[in-house]
Length: 193
Ligand SMILES: Cc1cc2nc3c(=O)[nH]c(=O)nc-3n(C[C@H](O)[C@H](O)[C@H](O)COP(=O)(O)O)c2cc1C
View 1 (cartoon, rainbow, N blue to C red):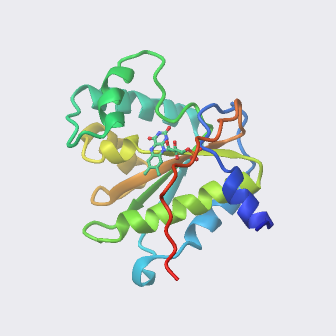
View 2 (spheres, rainbow, N blue to C red; view 1 turned 180 degrees about the vertical axis):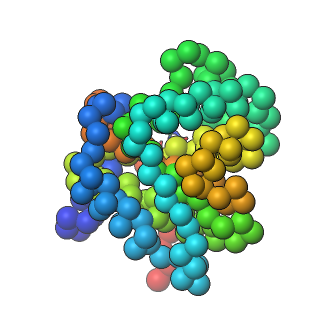
View 3 (tube, rainbow, N blue to C red; view 1 turned 60 degrees about the vertical axis):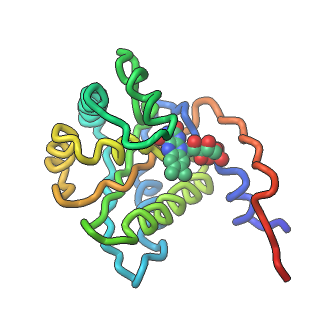
């Protein structure tokens, strides 16, 4: 089937190469509004979306992330968690791919749907970005470093409560180099009628 929404879902890609040009404030408003129209468990809406557009602050956060990964001990075998330790040592490492806007999704502590609610809201952001001609990418690093003292202190100065769980973040901006579509695996769908 074809319609504008289905096309948007198929066309969205994780962008990892952004232009430095900032997005329009109306676009940011639309993305944040899309986020809060996501469903939430029990209609909790206990999330907080913090959009960072100040490049100096973003670069400072990047330095704290780089430092945080130097003492980071992965808690499972997820390959990205291991690869990032070496990658973050590089001077040119930038965890948000130099996107001009980073939206951090956090949620209240001890709420079992915290990740699910924020992930649904982030997908709304990604699809809304695609519909506006913008690129976006799910960025997990702040979730991995959610207990890192330096990162948490800095996020606190931006208004993210210290007790909040950092669920994830979305990098957003104009697309520099488009990402190819990774093939979808077979046999991941079943229909029982
Ligand atoms: C839970 C989750 C975590 C992800 N974390 C990252 C990340 O930290 N950095 C990144 O570049 N992409 C990240 N991605 C994006 C995936 O790599 C991407 O969705 C996948 O390769 C498929 O590509 P597509 O989004 O273009 O379809 C994440 C995606 C999800 C759903």
